[in-house]
Image 1: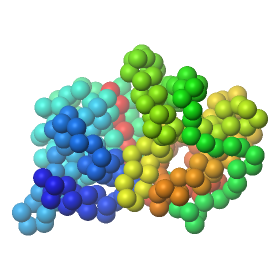
Image 2: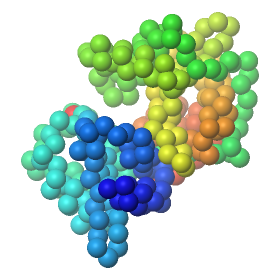
Image 3: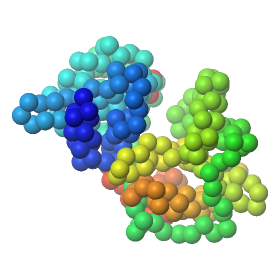
Image 4: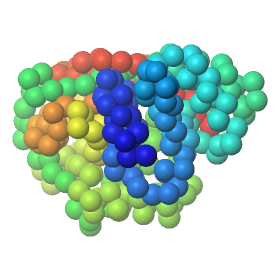
Length: 267
């Protein structure tokens, strides 16, 4: 299995921004629940041709239709996902195959640009905004703003599962994964460091409270977070809803460039 894992990581590294979540699972999650939901498609002649994960989110990397079809045939065993997410052509083809029997999605995000930034393309400055890792005593503010971001982007309130949601936020803060921007003693920006691989680190949960928008705080804070995290990773990446023009403009001003496109089906 370890040999397959090394080969799978090499396969995933061919599209690092698309596949950072799968690479992160293979490299860092040794739990039996994750291992049992990970599938690697191996061709006797061509080697690794696909990787898929069937957990709360279904995510896959597949080079051709035969591989996507094989993963679709595995899907009926796993019927409790909250989302299907990944490169748009792969997700759309997968849904064509499973949509005949699967429960319908409550929401579809058809176009989600995948963006990436390297040190050489980072633009701007911190403009008086202090960026730092969130402190444990700030968990309630982080949880509240994280919930508002999810409610806005995914149209559900994660506080419906309050104990689990709050526990996850506190655990991530303890691990140094939540970042905040602070201006004159007020928290003005929130972001967390998500899945990572040798090639990139994916930013998630990016949010500025509505009352603090329009002042350049998000741009300054995001620049600062990127400046810090690019010391840890050769690149940073994220994906965003295509209709979110204000977020796209923010990312462009900081120096992010589009490298791919995702789609997400939410259940």
